[in-house]
Length: 464
Image (cartoon, rainbow, N blue to C red; front, side):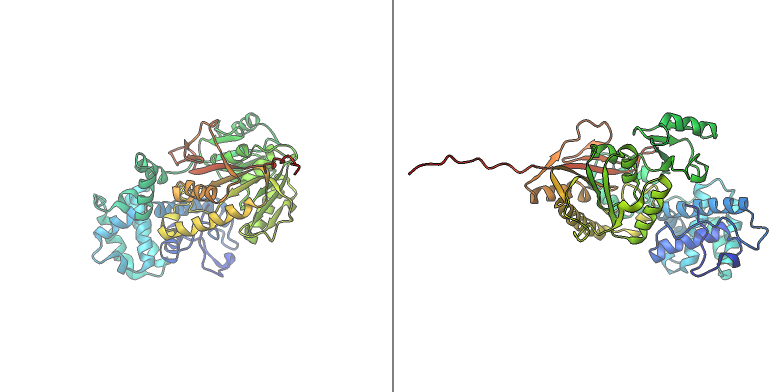
């Protein structure tokens, strides 16, 4: 998402275009020191009223650069901090936090972009004035010029892999033979994959539409997916506003097929927002009844807005907390999709701030909510129905471990083998995708069927 950060309460009309390095430094500061997400409310303006120099092309260019610098600096925060710390005359932790963030942005330009070194240094030094830190000009200039030739300390594992220690240890434990490749993939850029709405046109037809618009794409592993050769803003996708296509990772597109819904089935999406999996299901299976609930009213409103873009009646999307049953009318479901809240450890390419915002203690909290959600929604599943449990995590504690606990507590639950799929790796109860360069995000999927009640055998009546 393009970024042009404004202070809280600031009016766009009163603001001059913000230097991309200033915007990026503020975002890094908010993530690293304030615990704020990279996601909205950071957004790019389309124009700045009253400033003739702020034309659309300039704003678009600066928004792209600020986004690149912010996301890249957060993605490589651990290694960049290691480098900066080596050339500082005082400990990094003792610096002004906003200046520290600007140094990270400067180091990112020097190590990971094609921006000429002189421009990266000069523009970053100049940013100290806009940040109201003119006293830091000499410091920033000295530190950035010292970075040339500095190598990451070999004994700093966080810096070597650009991940926090707790996450390195968790991935190493769960994937002893491939953990380094997974961490490396996490630090790469995710591809842009599309979900073609087959109610509008076929994948092949939309691929031709893209080609006519100068955009190259190849078919993905899901029947409705296309992989773009190069990412583009959604406004460049033909017929996006009309609902012909959506942006969705291929891994997330697997859910609709796994549910194997039949005509007339009643389905529950228990943690629905942002809604991509449910929308995909309705695009491929419009003859089912769906109830999509989410506990966050703002996310529900956003999902209802997306319904309108795709041509769906938004009334099936409702506010409801799946940890309880206040929302349930008592009618059972044939299929349940439980896309449980999780660490997001499979999506670090798209959400690198997770590496700074989450910690080891969060896993226990996520596991507790995952267990509660699974047990609660199970009560609404009809005998013979199927629950699809999924997360965008690659960690066993949130995946097979949750299923193991659930199956131990529910005698009427029967795991369903996913032997007929070619993607991912089989686990004890499901299937696991892990991030790979150019591939989908990390996802876990497991199917559980609810056994039908056995009829009690009638005992033959005996006469005395």
